Length: 302
Image (tube, rainbow, N blue to C red):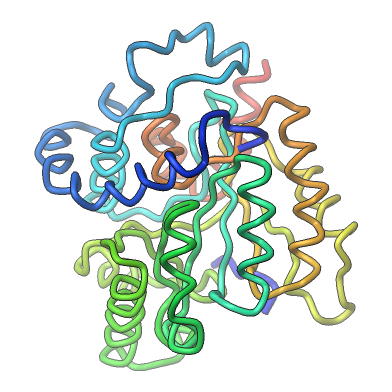
């Protein structure tokens, strides 16, 4: 059981990327057809043919996976049903993710991401959406949207019927406010059970966890921006999915150090769908859970 504590520069025009991401929902049906019959380690969903392997290995900016490949990758992992902790680590991509929004610091966070040309994924809580209904649409223009339930309960502590309503309600709220489909889910506190895994899959979402915890939500002792940035930069590596929160002022400040440092290392911050399409985890990594991220990284350094 895993709990939390409570694009370097991508190139290209940020507004164009935002429009492209909004079109993702329109291609979801076609992507599912393209993905049919493809295994988790098939060639579908990797970077487009215009980007060579040598370009990826050198860390140069490669053409992003097209929208059909992104949607198809998410659908494949949803059908597999295993939680995802990281990408495969074969390219210079990382996924920054933000939980518990939207909130009072969302606009400031979006400004930092736009300024750096970085993609991100936002796991939204339904009750927070009710307080800030205009923000999910702005977040979708910058990145991808996922659900984080309706009221953020520990799903293992509620009845199966209540868990089902929390998962469905959070998804419906995020979908309505953001103007597009929701096919990513993150359980509150990272707490999951086999029954929760089955319900998330039944509702048509892929379950996204993480391999790098920024600890930005720690309250005792409180954590500052320097500690958050230091923790992320010590542990992040190609393929990482980084856990942060968008309702923390110190996280916005930490981004001002994290984003340029990623760029200096040749790491590009992308959305979770982009990571899964361009650099999917192997079946072995999925089977190993969070440990598979470190094992995969170590094997590629030898």
